[in-house]
Image (cartoon, rainbow, N blue to C red; front, side):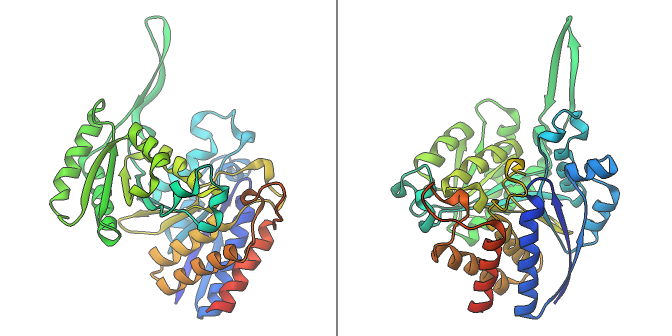
Length: 360
């Protein structure tokens, strides 16, 4: 097939890990006889430095005319003193809004070979395999008013949590559909004992549940969910939740795998290109040192192949190549202790490409 893809390297280690993704895509092209046309755009701090905005119009237009978008990472200390509306992270929020992606999928899978790198005991981790489905376009991150103001002679701050029923419904229905295709269990996370938005969220879940009678539904308060993720993570199949809760819980769940450098994500909308990115940050302290773990980005490529290009065989081949690389003992520094050997970013990318060529 032919596909047009946009790569946004971003900041910090973003250019290093996306370089390995481009190498992997070239390998997929050759092995499976596809044709991928790749374009590159600026976002985040890199865009601020050159064009003075975290999401230039030309970047968004490039993405909108693509079949899928692959993002590295944005942000870093260099831009922390900028006003809130000009920080690199605003570019990511605006990109999600511009693409219309409302659902972030974060698969959390514990690799047996890497369980020693996790802070939890292997017996607690065994069998952990879940997907967190997080709403992306509503909640505290987008509600207005959002401001500082004077009240009674002192400074006050306001953030607004805003959702429409439709925004909740489309995300929750997607969560049910995923649970139906997996193990048939949906955990809806909210704070219904305190927040009116969560009470409405729970009502929508209960209404949609009638459309999926084969799916077992569980409601869980967010504080309890945070605790259960470390006490008994294997109980979860699909977790569906709003923006802020999903942001926090998915990063907590990332620690189960031993390294945030192992976790991919996909952000999908009702139409248009999907956005794919590792969930780690820009890690400016190791940028340019060939130390970054590229596997989350390479697994994001697998999600891109599966969800946007409908190339399931190719996606499975990429995932198998990553698995073979890990099973063969290759590790980046984040996956080892001080006494174990490790390889760099570029070498890890080379190993995955080699296993892909050999195993197909």
